[in-house]
Image 1: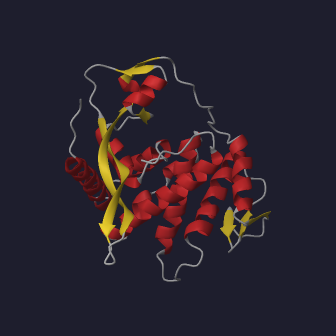
Image 2: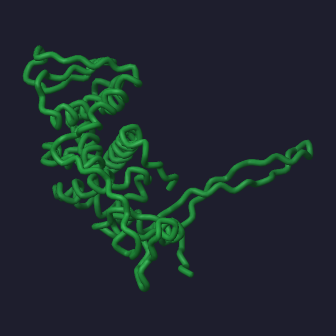
Image 3: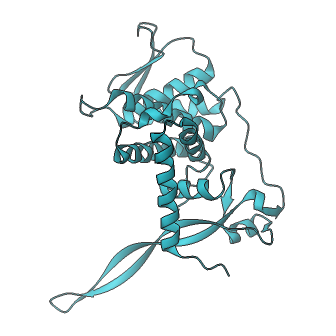
Length: 273
């Protein structure tokens, strides 16, 4: 039986976050890009758990608990070190009211659980996800459907200056004749603006807003296996000199990308971790 300490796991997550911030402060964009790519692989997991997986197993691609691997016909190899993450747990407590009536209340706390990457297991081959490479295929139609479900009107026009796309409060305008990969990526970018930035104060850092939108597009493209020019963006621009705003941006990116991915890939059930 593996004994784990939740405080140690929380400390590990803090150290991983601190290391990421130090790298960003030093202008090392590759560290942040690698973290965003990890988000794409593990969109079902929380911000902190993505940090934990990346810190303990940077090359991880697919993780699951011991029992889940057994259900899939695979066995964790002897001697493999577990990846520790935090899972939310709910405990019901009864508290005494002044009148003497008992009332139940839910208390949420976090517990360390162990997962292993697929490379740490042996057994039956896993089903392969379809490769997307340079064409989003079915995902472009799913993305358009998701945009429509949000009440956002999608239009095409070449009268938007030099831009490839434009977010206009309930409307997204894309340039005509974009390649499928470009259309997918630009639509993701503008959808992110609609989700994250419409209604924000005019004083909000525009560079941070653009980088957040580009980061969401990158994370989603990574999740579906699409290689686009968003990979070359300078994500260090998310950092405006404040640790709190960087963490806030990463959390917003993670949540926005996760919601989009869930709608593009409904066949993959989202984890509660």
